[in-house]
Length: 318
Ligand code: BMA
Image (cartoon, rainbow, N blue to C red; front, side):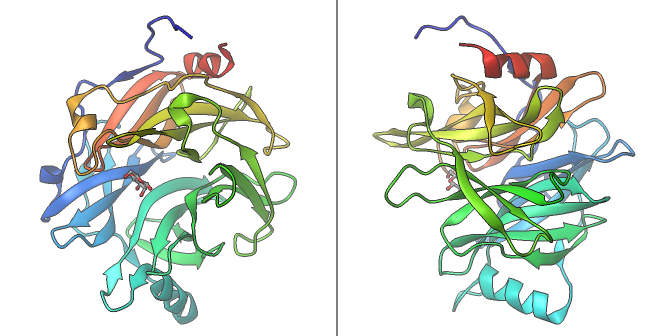
């Protein structure tokens, strides 16, 4: 198909808005962040920070305008009850290497506090972790919902039908790698697992996965997701948007035919992993403008802006 030129989302002129030199410690890369706007109007970014020895941390940055972020002096700490910490260490440290391997945090406001979902690697393979934080300085491990080969998890910001809900992304073995949903009474024990969205278009042919936690709109739960195309020289990541039914979130209401953001700028092409545009947060402002935060080339963090109405309209465009 040939599509008209349009800018559903426009890159911010200050891009990349966070880069390794902005961090207060030696940094190989800072990217794939989750972002939330607090009721007090502060933007909090939980970034994936890679130290000079390639260990992964979550490092928080804060902002008054959603564009200029200042990093906390130290990375986020994990602390909590001994049994939760034991389990957390068991699945975020690579045996022998002691690697602190938890990354790609997404932030979801829920139950008056904040939950982080992240990918955890212990050397067994990647699995999902959930942690809770009130201050974004210390996080308490909550659970590690599924076994390995599952990540790109985002929580819904409210209970639906009395349960917590989460999108997740098991790696397909005999079928396509697609987005699944699950529900839980307590954020620890998860069930009702079912696939809900598959790759449909060339730009997302290899796999799709949730990007931002869903945001309630009058047309459904709106979220950003990533789609991957298998070029000869490596994977190419783009961003699309999707609407899920408010009451039955396993039903896709509409999704973008085309990518709404795809690799165009040098900072998306040149980095640790070229041609990666990885959305992790969607912030809707009171004036119905939106901020979409995305990691670029597994190296820096970027921002694109637009309007809620354009993003929703793009989901329905055929
Ligand atoms: C995925 C994740 C992301 C990363 C992407 C591109 O599998 O590990 O963190 O941005 O690959 O390298």
